[in-house]
Length: 269
Ligand SMILES: NC(=O)c1ccc[n+]([C@@H]2O[C@H](COP(=O)([O-])OP(=O)(O)OC[C@H]3O[C@@H](n4cnc5c(N)ncnc54)[C@H](OP(=O)(O)O)[C@@H]3O)[C@@H](O)[C@H]2O)c1
Image 1 (cartoon, rainbow, N blue to C red):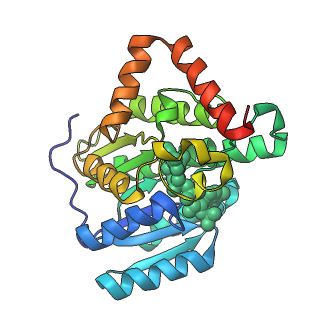
Image 2 (spheres, rainbow, N blue to C red; image 1 turned 60 degrees about the horizontal axis):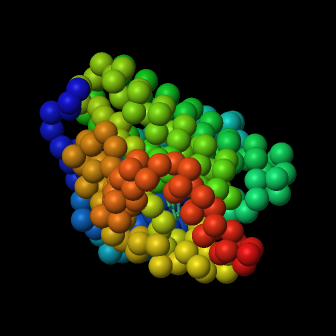
């Protein structure tokens, strides 16, 4: 630590998970258009990935592969990793795929709870372990970015498990970075606040809509931090101020206000 050179994605293979919509799709678009990267796009929805692959190939001329995998299933995670690490010389990976639940924690069934833990935590740890091992063993240059959330810093009532998963990722990946021997490989944790994506669509989020940032801006900030090999990055002035307020005003006060605002938006009470 710290790594020497900035990441240079041109003509290099970059994996983006959760590339069929939202932040993942936008990161893939910007990696191809602004950085000249070749891409492996991973998600479950084949039609969306094929659409994005055609769009990127037409607009940029870069190479694009798609990989269909359900990351809530460990066997599919392992198969995807095997395909990626044998098919291409991987330079970088953005582990972005995740799901959430907006609502009372008690309304989440055990199966839904497990699926979220598998997708948001297990899959990311499994992929991080394997990718890190790959770069440590061959001493190649590269980078890994894990998409966490502001919910890792300020836990969100009515998104309790989600907040827990995102906190886990922040602790796990920032600690791991300081165990790395390969000085040309870095791990970055990106913690965005609310973004306009499929995740925040729908009536439930109506009262919170003015907190959301356009996805293109968030993707740009994320890629900038990744390229500079930052340890962590919070995009946007208001998110950074929110984080400061949380520290100054105290957890109890801020969480009480958050719970009130979310309750109103979710249940109109
Ligand atoms: N939106 C926000 O306000 C916000 C705020 C902070 C952080 N984030 C984080 O940003 C990242 C992207 O979220 P987003 O807002 O772009 O959400 P999104 O539009 O819902 O995209 C989520 C992506 O994850 C993929 N995915 C979900 N479950 C999967 C599974 N089991 N296997 C493989 N892929 C799976 C989805 O693809 P398929 O459905 O095709 O599989 C989709 O491409 C997430 O890590 C999220 O926690 C979002």
